[in-house]
Image (tube, rainbow, N blue to C red; front, side):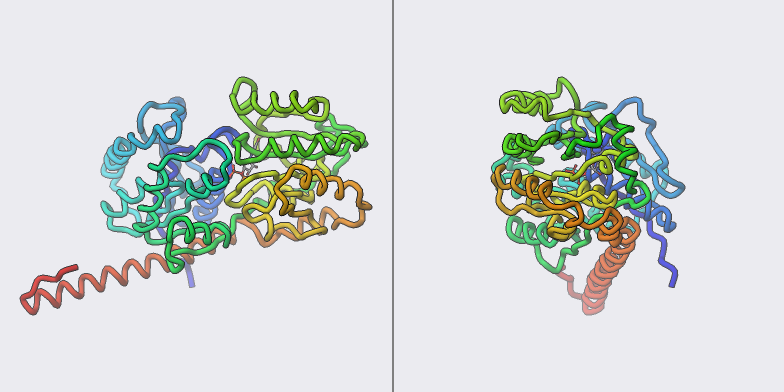
Amino acid sequence: MEEEKLNVAMFSIHSCPVGELGTKDTGGMNVYIRELAGELGNRGHRVDIYTRVHDPNDPQVIHLNENVRVIHLRAGKNGYMHKVAIYPYLDDFTGTLENFILRENLHYDLIHSHYWLSGQVGRWAQARWNVPHMLMFHTLGAVKNSTGVGEDEPLLRITTERQIVQNCHRIIAATEREKSELMRFYCAESGKMNVVPCGVNMEVFQPVDKGSARRQLGFSDDEKIVLYVGRFAALKGIDRLLKAMTHLRHHNGLKLVIVGGDGHGAPEFEAIQRLSSELGINDMISFIGRIEQGDLPPYYSAADLLAVPSYHESFGLVALEALACGTPVVATEVGAMNSVICEGKTGSVVADSRPQAFARAIHDFFSKPRHAMESADSIRNSVRQFNWSHVAKAMIEKYESMLADFNFSKMKVLGARAQAAQSGRTAIL
Ligand code: UDP
């Protein structure tokens, strides 16, 4: 049976889906929104993704494909704002949103919000438009605080997240772990949640011949390359990885290649460079800066392994991307690592949080004979089931079931009102 075509309003208020990946607030969530919306559009659903004006030079409307638009609306100043500083301007945002919708005579079947700030706008819209509201948090304030890493998230965020959890119609968690965290820290009802894993673009992320990739990037064949790809946020654990490197000095030619970050001058970058100097490992580290996603496959292919040293991840897309390129992954036990890495065959998950333990896993990897790991093709095959068209298909099912539940409740309310009117009573609903 053909799918009913849906009109979806997505909110990604604090971070622009077309922003520069690997920088401050722009990473996995943006990839998720772009890829999911793109797939929904390919299937004929219409998606409007609303975000703040992050760059005054961006046009108000950008078409990602024939059915998908990114729409920039004003909230606070036009340009970068700290996430929490956006909160007081959310009313501003809903005001411009209302005008835009009236002007274009738009109607949506459902709302899909990403992150707590968008969830707050979604709460407003669900009441205003009388449509169901699905939420994906991507990260949760209380969970972040429980790691004790980086700055504490404000109570405002956690209180708002609690209200959204109670109020929205459906919550998507990327892993069973995230679902448990939602139950443990936010008392989320299990029946309101669905687990839908993230995906990887298997066309973009393909193995490149290791030798050619290394020549292209200026690395030599005899180097042992450990790669890091991602933002420079404290939770990413680059400090743990640098400390692990100090235990690996005896490996001749071992090099840590770091991709991502906002570059020289950014406080996070300066802090990592300072730590590297303090640890005396500058000669082992190469800082590459941020790389366009389409240019990442040679980096993944040139590397012997990808390191994911995070203290917390909601999923960890870079692991899937490396595996799709045939490169093994050594990771801490975060996000989806336990379900995407096949222990000893496509990488290793390190349960012990100490840098020495992470170093030991890297050491073991380089000490093993080459044939102990799967071939690049088998590693790639191990993640074939994670693709964005599966994510979109699963999401459409969840949209449909949320809509059915929502319409059923609406009918019940209308029915009770009609009955009460017939019997001359006032329905208390
Ligand atoms: N990324 C990129 N260029 C960079 C660094 C990262 O395109 O220089 C992308 C990377 O390919 C991945 C995303 O940013 O898709 C990071 O997602 P992940 O889930 O690993 O981390 P998050 O940003 O969600 O914490």
